[in-house]
Length: 448
Image (cartoon, rainbow, N blue to C red; front, side, top):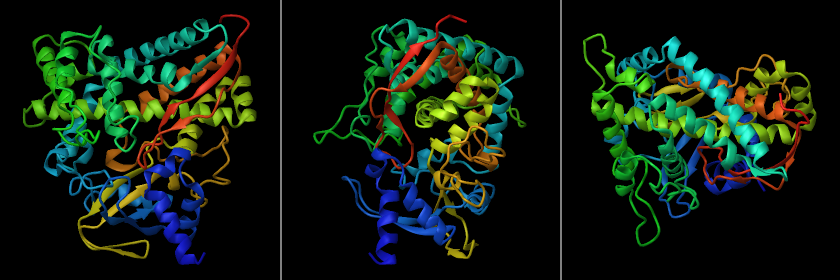
């Protein structure tokens, strides 16, 4: 193949969601990154989805940080943050994720103030208790020492934590599992019509939401979940929950948020609450739900590193940072150029899509020595899995707490851990998802 043909094959691999069912195209990204920090990627019609106009893909760490810290030039609002153009741009622009300052700054301040020290301390204690309980359930519930870690263990911790944050009754938490599947897994036929929660055992709010759940059309396709019309059950639940919290506020973060006032004396509107609820219930769930099994895959495929962390639990915080770098749950985010600009020698025109590759930046040889090596002692480790700049993930602290708590409990309660078959990965060029992760273990000889 000529150099042009190799480059075309590499950019196709990067944009095709089917590629990722066997893992992200790391070699293709390495070759593209070696050519330069920015490359043009076409968007052909794939898997029944229409062609797009194409985008600039930013591959190196320095340039990714530059794009993310300059919202005046690289806007989240102008074209939203998903690489493929939104079907309902007016609506998605109302989400905090897709805002620029000052609108983004106002909501972020209100939300940040809602995570009071008392609330964070309570959440941290609850996370540690929940993580220990989930591992106990895993160990004590299967004498043969086998389970699907992704579904049976990892999925539950962020759901329970988010239920605490949002003030969602615990029995309704699997609604968030379905919502995340549909939004993040819209490119994957196994997840696009997820309906694991049937309302049985849930609250009256949950049953009303399930009644609004859309059904697949004659071709088996669901409405676009990145639109309000595509998620009527989520928005219906959020509206009912907000009404309930305004009547009888609790101590959860969302109750505190609804009581907050901004600098002008204004409060969070119903629409703003619904969109924040979407952000937490979907984005807040999915990143960790895939980061946990992804981190375990890293340990299982690097047994010497697993043994090192087991022998020295003080390595766990650094190991978590390396898991996030090595797995990189959210692989790419989009911005749109507001003006003509030179980006590392590439002329980007106003209106062009600019996508930053966190996967590539987290493997940038200019920043990380031997970047494909999983090293729990790596330091420094400026991984970008939580983003950078004004949109740096608000939930980063709680995500780290959850990862440390679950892996700490898992290593304490087991003597051995190993794969029990290959993992099944999500068809998505956005989220590095794990649908199934079969594992086997032997329990530790004595309970701590």
